Structures are given as structure tokens and as C-alpha cells.
Length: 284
Image (cartoon, helix red, strand yellow):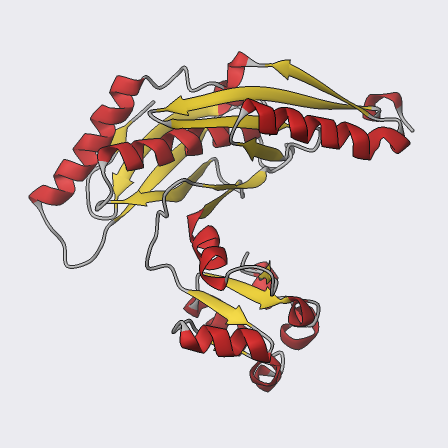
């Protein structure tokens, strides 16, 4: 094994906003794991050390202050949050406006540099009306119908017959998918690569989990993914949130984004917050 692969680096950063405290683990392949306490963080480090022991790999935990949200002050954050919410109140719309975090990047070459991708679960659901469809076995479909959640069984998927237009239409109709363990392995065979291309390959839904909680978890999870351009945007909240709720979501989102970037804050050109119909507010 190459010597540079023998050490799995773990960087820790504490994120704090009001009553929210999050511990963050960064390791070799740029994945991030969040723990709710220092004790849980240490337990995870110990578990990782134990599981990697046979492969001769060691986890080194160390403090890293470079990932803290030092570039955006608390005052600036709340100023932007309040401006976004006030703008929505001044001109009330007939729908629930989503609040987006808009990111401009720099010192990145999309053609040469590795394109980052990562997901993080926010404390508050940013898009409550997000549509999640269950691709389920009989038990999950029965449960979904009781909860008034859209669902499809294997027979319904077979009827699509891998038709690209129909699969594309399905992917467009729903924001996310969850699939039963018995069905998730069949999705590529039944539907082809359509859902994966749309970035909506189903998450796993087991019978040991609460369907309602799993759906809420999916709704609370956002994805940062760099494509061919140096800008991206993600939904981080909505205008019916309190200032504290929205601020906590934005705070966590920014810290997670910075953790994904190769040079952290040196890769951030600009950060804005914007409601669907409102003007952008500059965070950074």
C-alpha cells in the first residue's frame, strides 16, 4: 500500500449557532461526518480506528480552525436573514418562497480539478412541500398509501419498460425517491440509468425505519455539487422560518460547503441569500 494512503486524516471543527453545536469530521476522500457532541465524535474516531486497524491505517484527530465560519460574522448573517424575511413579508406571495444560498467560486478549474459533491442534513427542513416517492414492496406501498405518500411497486416500474421519456418524466415529477431493500437493486434493471442521471437515485428505506422520519430526513438533506460552471445554489430554508431557524441552516450549509472546497475559503468568491422572488442579500 502506498505510504500516503496509510494515514486517514480526521479534522475536527466545532460549529455553534445559538443552541446548535455540531462536530465535524473530515477524512481522506473528502467525506464529512457530523456528530452532535465531542463524546460522540471521539466514539466515531475510536470506531474508525478499530475498523481500520487490520488494514494498517490510523486515524489522527486534530483541531482545525480554518473551517470555522470566520468570514461571515453573526451580525452579517442575521442582517441578511432579516432582510430576506422582511422582503417576503412586504410583498406576500401566493406560495411559500424558498430561500437559496447562492455560491460563486474562484481558483477552480472545472475541467482539471476534482468536482466536489456532498450532502448534509440541515436542522430544519428547507422545502416542506418537497415531493418524495416510495418505490416499495407491498408492505411499504400499503404504509405509503396510509400516509398519503406517492408510491410505485415493481409492477408499476416494469410498465415504464425503460422508456427514456417516461423515466425522465418520473424523475421530473418527484424531488426524491426512497426504495425498499428488495426493490432498490432492481431499479437500474427496471428503469435504466434515468434516475441516476437526474441525480435522484433512490435512498434505501428499510422496514426497521419509520417511513415518516426517513422522508423528513430526505427533505432536510441538501446536496452541494460542482458541475461545469463556477456557481451553484442550494435551498437552505423558506420564508416562514424564524430568523434563528434560517440562520442555523445557513450557518451549517456554509461550513459544510467550505469543508468540501480544496482550499476552503480561498475558493469562495461570493455568498448570497435570496428568496424565490426577493432581491439577493450579500453574505460574503
